[in-house]
Structures are given as C-alpha cells and as structure tokens.
Length: 250
Image 1 (spheres, rainbow, N blue to C red):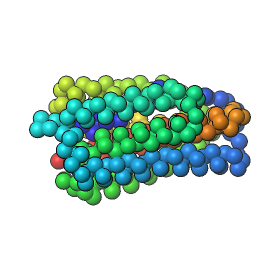
Image 2: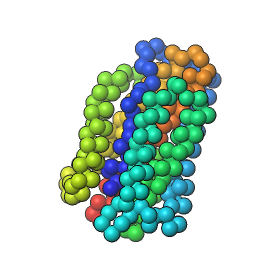
Image 3: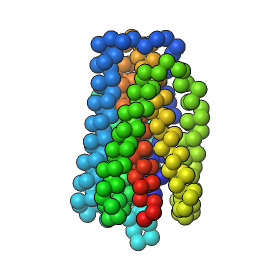
C-alpha cells in the first residue's frame, strides 16, 4: 500500500520566469516561511501517525482482507484536497491555505499509519533510517535546485509523466495487489524516489525564480504556502518510498 498513498501532486506550478532571483532579506524571509510551513506540516503528519497508532483508530483503517473503506475515503479525500488547494492557490487567503495544508498533513498522517505499523512490527529502525535518508536527499536536492545556474524547467514534463505513471501503478494495485510484489515493486519504489527527489530540485528553482517576478506581498505569501505544499509532498513521498524499499524483504 505504501507506493500508492502519495498520489496527489503538482497539477499547478508556480509561474516560471527567466529573470535572475533576488538575493535579499526578502528572499530569506520567503524561504524561511516556506520551510517553516513545510516542516510544520511534516511534524503534524508525524504526530498524527503516532496518535493513530496509539489509539483504536488504526483498527478502523484495516480489515481482514486489506484496507477499509474509511482508509480509501481518507486517501482519495487527501488527493482531492491537494489538487483543489493547488488549483485555488492564488485565490485563497494565506491563512486559509495554511489551514488546508494542516488538514492535508493530518490526512496523510492517518493514511501513512498502515505502512508505519508494518515497519514497527518488522523493524522500527527502518523508520528512522528512512527519515534520515529522505531528509538527506531532500536537503541535497533542495540546495542543488536553489544554487544551480542550469535551467531545470525541461524536467517539468518528464517529472509530471513519471508522477502520472506512479499514480496509475498505484491505482492498478487496488485491483491487482500483487502487482507491486517482487522486482517490479522495487523498481517502482526506486523510480518514485528519483522522481520526487528531482521534483524537489525543480520546485526549489521554480519557487526561487517566481519570487523575483512577484511584487505583491499577498501573492508572495500565497506562493510560499503553495511551495511548502509541493516540498512537503516530495519529502513525504521520498520517505514513503525509501521506507518501502527498506522493508521489501519482509
């Protein structure tokens, strides 16, 4: 189930511009806001997963034959919320967008619980290892995307196609659960890690450039929330795929 819990992704991108990004205090505050919101969402997801595992709620997510109806409602509800929030990113008030990010983080925390429970039973250390690996990859790719002078916009189409492929495989696994077994499942996880690692670099460069083209403070705040959502999804996806890889032998 791990490879299909992160399906909603970037249907709407921040505006691409060709101008050189500003290196100013404003840019610093902008990035601090993005990462503050993003890591805050990660913390909310972690706390939600812990609470879900520590209460009877986790039992409502699973049945004797697989995931429950509630699980799928939360999964696809999160998918719909993510897409809607991105489409409406520049129409929502920043405070409302932050609230939606928090709701999405809670939904993801619940949806991730079955994977985390499996890891706890098999080898709890893999959770810390996956988090460390994902964090290191995220940091490196975010730094690369921010610092590189090479235009990464050409990656957009390929990454979107890769993401759609991952979504389709995830949907197919609802019908044929065994499709993600064996070598194919490993390949899917590796592709997932690669796609979302590159998405991190791509989004960082896009967010940096977009800041230079926006003069309105409200739009900058809206863009910061949208950027936090994009980076949050990439980080959680990498964590999930890495955790799945570490537990595939089990």
